[in-house]
Length: 214
Picture 1 (cartoon, helix red, strand yellow):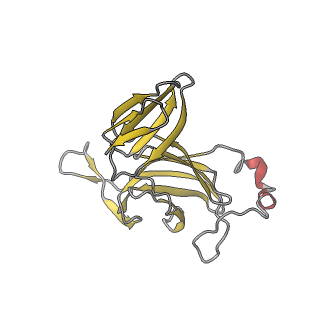
Picture 2 (cartoon, rainbow, N blue to C red):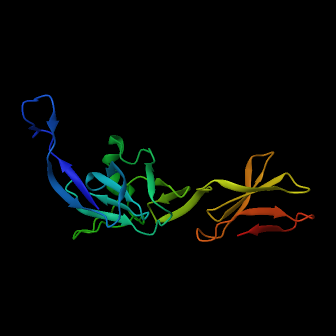
């Protein structure tokens, strides 16, 4: 998939209608093999600002302003990327610039995919996907954690526990989630995979077992 770059200062006017500008693509830049689903910018070190893209396979890539690849996360395979949201800490504020180099010493930041291999430093971020995942990414150390998983299709099965304040839901996404309907909290969940769509679910009389119909 390519990114189309337009020069807004070079508009081509069509015929006699001078009020209808047509933009002409000045550059086609291949960035992903899959479709690009998200595009934004964020602060980074050492390039000041970088371009962030997400694609339909779940990859998140970072480029400098000349579209040179700096770093990418190819193991975030939780569905097409809908949004990437960055933390707003004091990491890149002016008051910290003088001591910035000292503050990152000894920390396990990844390195840029460049010849210089400088430390690649951005704010921690959260990725949301169309498969109803939210993943927290800690840049230092590369820690990735699923912080939310929901049904990404209609809930088509529901059953209540015979004794406890629990209700179980299931869907064609292959996910079973059990909630405490008084505290509104998730008790547990189990994913059987997208290829195992669940038609319905039911507790047994004792509440010790829950059956699913695939």
